[in-house]
Length: 68
Image 1: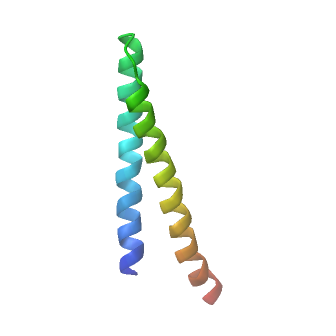
Image 2: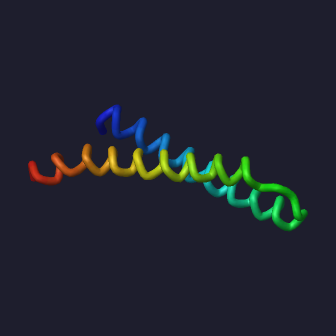
Image 3: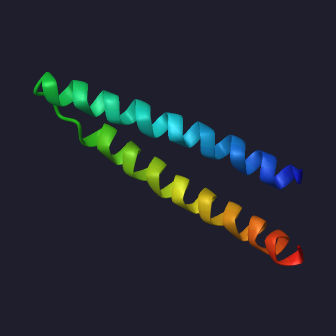
């Protein structure tokens, strides 16, 4: 497997975990009636990064699929 693909998959897994953790943190802040703005901003950045990594992975995989 291509090293870039391995690194992308690792980053995607990390970001998915971060998104889940941020979502849980936001839920806890809301339940405690606290400001969740910073957590929401971190969540939006993590989601945007996740989309970029997934798109990059798809571009890496797409040429390999055409070669078959």
